[in-house]
Structures are given as C-alpha cells and as structure tokens.
Amino acid sequence: DAGVIQSPRHEVTEMGQEVTLRCKPISGHNSLFWYRQTMMRGLELLIYFNNNVPIDDSGMPEDRFSAKMPNASFSTLKIQPSEPRDSAVYFCASSLAWAGGPFSYEQYFGPGTRLTVT
Amino acid sequence: RKEVEQDPGPFNVPEGATVAFNCTYSNSASQSFFWYRQDCRKEPKLLMSVYSSGNEDGRFTAQLNRASQYISLLIRDSKLSDSATYLCVVGRSNDYKLSFGAGTTVTVRA
Image 1 (cartoon, rainbow over the protein chains, first blue to last red):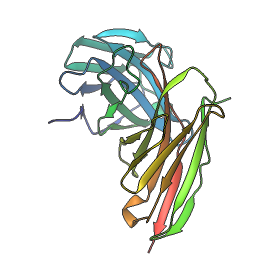
Image 2 (image 1 turned 135 degrees about the vertical axis):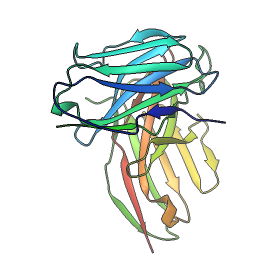
Image 3 (image 1 turned 120 degrees about the vertical axis):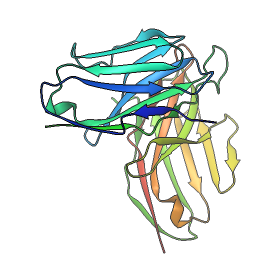
C-alpha cells in the first residue's frame, strides 16, 4: 500500500515567493495533519483536518500560512510570502481516527518537504 | 511546561547492551501512548503503541505508569540499526492531536 505522499521533497525559494506544499494521505484515512520540524523547536503541529474539515489551526504561525483540503485525497499548505525563518522540514501525516478507540490515533507520516527560504 | 518531556540523551551503548529511557507527560487526561522512531533526515515512524499493562514487540518493551505519568522504553540486545531518535508521543481522547516529545537519541556502537 502506498503511504503518505508529499511533494516536492525539496524546495528552495527566495524570500517573498509563494510556496505550496502538497500531500496525499493514505487512502481511507479520515484525518490529516501538517507538522513543521526544526532543530530549535522540534515537531510542531500546524493544523489538522478531520473528514476534510479544518478542526484546529491554532498552530499556524501567521496569516502567511494557509491550508486546504478540497477532498479526502489531497491537501495543500501554502506560505505566502515566504520568509527565511520558514525554513524547516514540513511533514504531512494521516490517521484513521474515531472516538472511543484508545489506539485509534496512530499517525503515519510522509517523507516530508525540506524547505529552504533564502 | 511542555506536555511531553524526554531526556534528550544521547545514550551511547555497545552492541548487545540494554538501554532504557523514560518520558513524562503532564496531561492526566491523556489516553493514547506511543513510541515513534526517527532516523536522521527521515520522517517519524511508529515503533509501537503503549498499553496500560505494558507490552513487548521483539526486543522492545514499553511500560506505562499512569499514576506517575511516565512512559518507558527498553531495548534489549541493541543492534547498530537501533541508532535513532525515539519520540515519546501522547494523545488525548477528546481530539485527534498527538503531542510529541523532543526525542531521546540512542547511538549503538560496534
């Protein structure tokens, strides 16, 4: 089975440019998560969706960040305009989550997009 | 205070040794517990779930102590391939979010 797919795997862009990261979750999963990882701050949750609906975007750092999930098999994370401090690895993860199941929350991560903003 | 705290290590151990480390969590409402492993420049991967009664998966043993709010991982007969960062992960029952610790680095040497 295909895991979580992310593209691009690497992105180098100049400050001020728009960046769009893409994610295809595991088929059948109903929750999708966007994370950012840096050495200084570790793994941070940016936003997550359940059944394509954004549930919690409290981790989105600024209005420059936006995320969409138009259907169950695709999500985007956009940064506009990008800044050097946005440089990080961005992970997408998906899970099959439902209430009442203690082990319903395993998340499966994609390979990540390594973003460098110069 | 961070929701999940881990000793960052590194734990440097010889092949064949046993290594163990803990993490603590602050939210007593936490219901799901996991260990993830992350190799350098790779994504986190689920190593094992942690059950209330403790559980084993091959050379790996996980324990949960709800009263003291800590989780442990023990690796027996360490292999070179066990070298990685181990992330302690905690989830609640009222949402789908997981809280990740900063990780414990383990290096197994020949």
